[in-house]
Length: 595
Image (cartoon, rainbow, N blue to C red):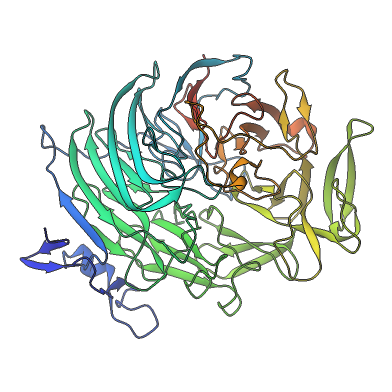
């Protein structure tokens, strides 16, 4: 079989061939003298080489129809009118980032408190065929997610896509996807199952980060299947992008002709054909995010820069037109040559019609506010100086406030070695902008930032937030978990097992058994529902915070919930919400929360 697609009778994008045609700016180039294909050409129906992909069309199913995607969501403004609007939720969660890919919605009140251990506010729980990391797509009473195929352990590229009855947890049907690049299972930094399915209410698209995706109709009949060459050696299996759906386009991050590079790519949901590939490059660690410009133009913010000498350059951000693939603007970090630890695109790239947001780690840890219309830096806000830090006093068993302090001059709640200071490291992918604040969990105790001053990540076990207008920064130490009786536990490093529902330990390394704070993990990205922010860590602890809290203090912690017994529960996942219930998962179970 010839691997590729035909356009007007001419085969393009044959597998294994070096195809160097990528989307650039309106003129069809991207600033380095290489030819490109403009978005205008694509929209006019020009052929676009597909690079290292294989598209196999299987038909449209028995009804032969593709109806337009439903758009039941109205846009409303949040409490802070200058910032990102939330989406009015109408009962579906069609992709990892929710109805419009922004990771936040408003509408019905979500369940806030629950306990799997004590069976409190749990509608149902069902065992899963194997471990997995995908989020849960929801449409009506259908849930979609992926796991590793039953019986797999250690390293695998075989996954299973599941369609589940949201009322009962019963599996309705399943499909298999197999990739060419095996991943370590339950890896703390993603695995083959990490990408969340997307759905439009008539079809569902499953993804295997090891190199395959496909489309199925509502009854599980295959429509098309597409293989691609995944990012691989010498780089680790660190893929944290999430597929996105907007109109007739699915967005994924994939390699192309330039060795080691990954790119943001738009794929026709009906056929699996590549529509455009943005030439700026997108680090596989990055989580691009959909949004709309001030003029209502759908666009995607994505970034470059990270660990392990990822090659995409220049290091920085791009805002890309979601329809044409043209770069609307580029933000270059300094000279664009320095990656981690100073510049790390290991975050959800949140933005709104006014600003885009990022972090800089050296010489002083800072929060960046970027003009969303021009890509120009508006302001830099220190994450270290003049902050309010509320830490848990273990002896007094209460919080104490250190107001307006310089973190370099205070002791952390965990002991530091002689000469060490607190170095702020926002936890990877654990960030969200809500109601004019940029919230983030804070990595703890490690020394990954080896540039001066010498220090350890902190403040320990905290959630932080930046007021994006004033620059005011607050930190609040969180309990690391709750015990089986619901008592909060502070300030200790935890471990958990890496077993699936069959009791088989399927993980390959010790980092998968850590809590994700001191050995920083790729936690599931936070979600905001009705201004309540949900964070989940590796041990199955889910925090619910008041996103509109006037002060980030103990009262802002609305709940600390468990997804199972402490030390026996593992999760790298985000919540989904259907207007009534929250759906969550662990390595062992799929869980419906809310009666």
